[in-house]
Image 1 (cartoon, one colour):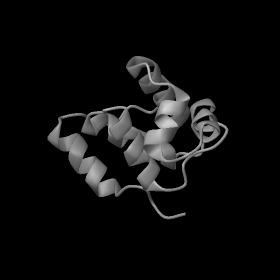
Image 2: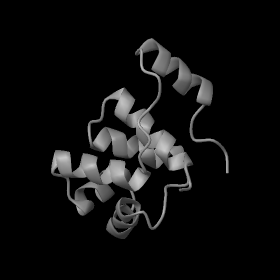
Image 3: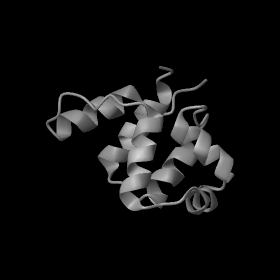
Image 4: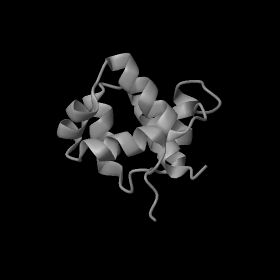
Length: 97
């Protein structure tokens, strides 16, 4: 699987924002927190991202991860995430824990 992000870009981002590291959470945890914070429903996100409601549910519960960068970027836009939060999602999608 190709990288969803460039590690040098993330490191540079962290340095610019004077942070030592991006918070280490699972993709599912981050997505479910952002979804809850924005009061977004599965079907709303699914429509905006271009996937099924079941796919969003699986990502939120940790049953699966997006395999490409594009749906993560669409999720971030749909949830109106700031760049740092978007980068956290991208980073978390790379981790297979």
